[in-house]
Image (cartoon, rainbow, N blue to C red; front, top):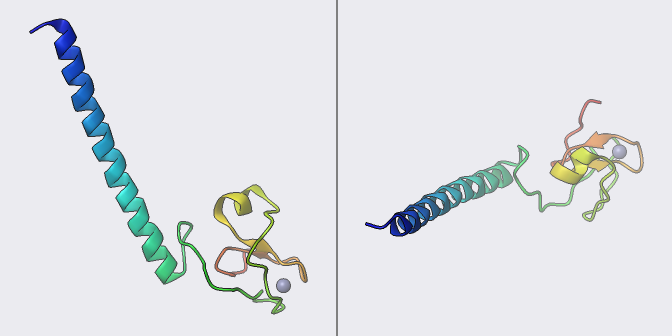
Length: 95
Ligand SMILES: [Zn+2]
């Protein structure tokens, strides 16, 4: 077998293995997102419900402007009424 053919076969096998790993990881992450969305906790879930501030009852906007890197990455609010730091589930975070 020529060296060129061997390299092509290795590249193909490598590609298939990498694609398999990515799809397994993707499926695991998707399952985690669905689980945490239903359980309403954790960083990977998606909160589709409207949330009130637990401290002052202010209706938090569904479209939010992140005020920190954490909020940009993981969601959450700073309450406009009482300045409470909330996660995406509307849980109060200690500063
Ligand atoms: Zn508040």
